[in-house]
Image 1 (cartoon, one colour):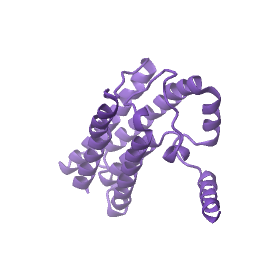
Image 2 (spheres, one colour):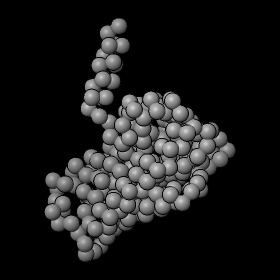
Image 3 (tube, helix red, strand yellow):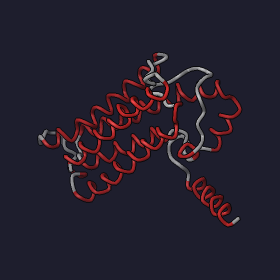
Image 4 (cartoon, one colour):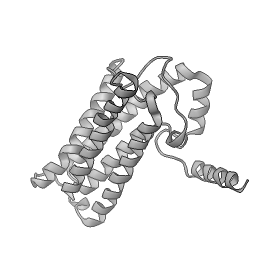
Length: 210
């Protein structure tokens, strides 16, 4: 499973960072990559990046039979769900980027020009890209369970929390005031609530019946 984990994860990274950058540059003339706007964002971005690197390296360490393997996860019953999480998380991350369109940025923009995207996956959670990356990374942890993978996932989680809670959300509240407050109140941060999913499904059925 380690070969599948490293292959799938590297493909995801190429798509969401390299290919997305090329697409964005063709559409807007800019790369979309931004420097951290403050020290807090630098910490969050650094942890996020280190987490991705550690998760990517973990399957290689697994192939080399390096010490630090998490034995209670090292079996097929964990690897198969891990592959599902990797694939599903990758789809969520890629679709979230596509739905952002030209509003996509690799970094945080602290300005009133930042666009508030609320359609598609953003109608279920406010940060579907982070959700997708965390889910895909958790899949790698299950497919190549070792200390590096676990530490990487935790760094990714902490970095995401710092960026979202302490930098992005305050900026969006300032830029969009009332509209973001309503969106924030009705839409979860990372994980969709069962009640919200049920409500959206009922609305969809109602529209089809009419």
